[in-house]
Length: 113
Length: 114
Figure 1 (tube, rainbow over the protein chains, first blue to last red):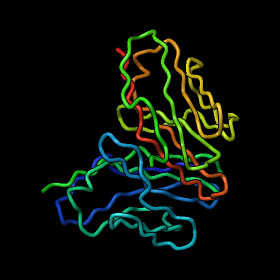
Figure 2: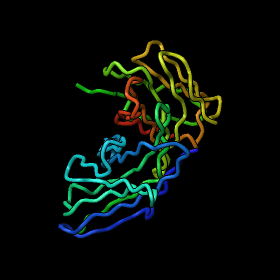
Figure 3: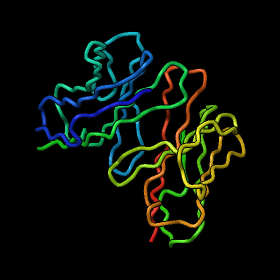
Figure 4: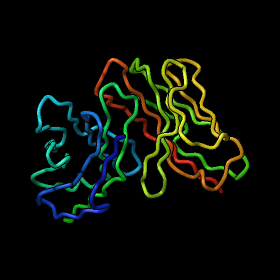
């Protein structure tokens, strides 16, 4: 069975501050992990993905995430928040060859000017 | 070029009506999905088709019926619409040869049942 837990349904940061969105996963097989972003009234866009090649994954728009097996975590970070980063962020997990993605409940990021 | 497209983008209708949402992908993917996103933003998979065959059918009322005329299209037909069907419906697709299971999402269809 696979699942993800996103801690904090709502995170607020000041513009220029560090962004940290938390994701913990549970998987009975080696996981593949994803972060998607959903801007208001839009579909989901892939930010980055972990596919076992490297534990530190860099994505679009300056985001990165680190896979930590010992902590079963895949937290998303960005050194300096920008107003345009305000959106809903979803963590998701899958397994090798699996057809399905299991999504977390999402974290809404608000950036305060 | 839009990779995964959905029509309509907005759909407002009365309870009891029947409506359809269409999805098309031009990525050459083999697998397509329908998700429902509720008012709290929770994403729940509804169906998945692979080369026109149903492979995932979650616990969804049988008022919902997906149809895949070819592997580039996956439509969703909803009979006897209820208030609780109001949500955003997302279509997605995935290339089977990609073991990383990355899915590409459409822009969503916001369904409002009055």
